[in-house]
Length: 256
Length: 322
Image 1 (spheres, each protein chain N blue to C red):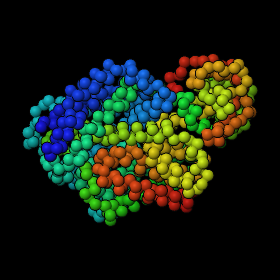
Image 2: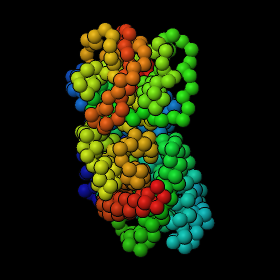
Image 3: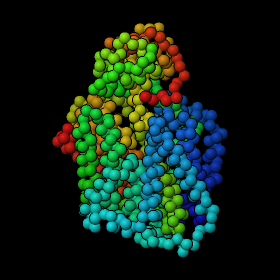
Image 4: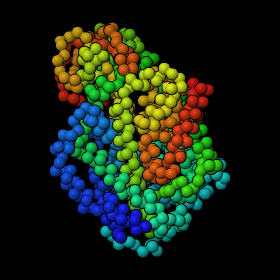
């Protein structure tokens, strides 16, 4: 039997997979899954997969070169199974498992799932705010934009000292708080979405929030000393005294 | 032999089947993306895709390096580079892992390629375990994730190195060569042809198993409620076992696991160290990939032994150092 059929199909699978990676990293799609810093590596990876596929096809459609063309210096041993097809086990399984690479292709090109959001925020406990030794003053601006994680750690570990007297602007999506009240949340990702954990900030006062969970908001307000515990993991949750809020389109980089 | 070939024919076989599947996918594109609507299913798909997207550059790096080893590095090089005595080659190979950045997905094909090039399996396996756990990137990430506990970095490096070396020595004493069944790679004339053939083969093979592992990890991360972990954290022994099992199930890349460990702040430092030692050595996607590259008989023995040893080494190191 001619194994060529097999290799051609593998080449097509690799081409699709590489193409999907290239498309995701060329557009902003990859930002839903990984950090921005991975982009150059993703582009290289996609290109390598496409080249591998093309080289496979190239060698498939070119007649095999006679062995004497290549000096065979380092390949004497280790190829004891060279021409025998004794290893039927591994060989027989290779093709079937290769099909699975079509799943991420479908995932990236057809489904393109959204960034993690309200479901993850409701299911997991809020990230414990990181204690820093030194909290410098906030940058200029009125209101001044602050990240949720920064806000929570300044509020909890610095008793809000660097926050008092300032008008603050927080951006996040609506999640459900412990008492059913809406909270502002954002997913914090250190490597890829698989390690994404929510950071939650409670909202108090201000106009009533009547938007569905998952809506992105820009909230302005002032620091509030109010605290609560996340029922999932007993992490401290800081609060913001809301002055006003407005729905916004989700930002390009949804993770913090 | 005849059986294998019919299997091939029925397997990924023909381009025609692939084309048909793709045409169906394009036709049913609307209903298909409509299927993924529930928030749980959506979160599953996001985590599944993100594990893959994150791991693929590292896998490609490993595949490239292993193809270079397989095609361009003569086996006489390894005979010169590693100590003659296998018992000494094991720690040498483990230390070689320190300088090679990469995550666990990449080290599986590299180890397979090393064995194929005549490196003693014990040394290649020690490299397989050490390289993802103690390379500079991972140790830096650990230092960043635990700013208040620099001893965590030392503990992680020492415990992981110990597991790698001891597993290598254990393999020398107890391991049997016929447990390892490397997938058949035909002898190919021409370096270019051999190189690209190795790239294609390893990518399809290890990549397929990576998909299995990513799916398993996504399922666990969406299904296990975090509240369960809370009840376990209070008991010192249970918390170690819980985080060891969680490390296996979550299958997070070794570059990211320190940040996850840091966020599990209700658990003791020792149990989080165990999480960091077990994770890069045994997890669902690694077991799937090792099954693919080395065979089922190997993976079913190697993974449980490594798990037990990693839990032991992590707990001991934590008890002494933390």
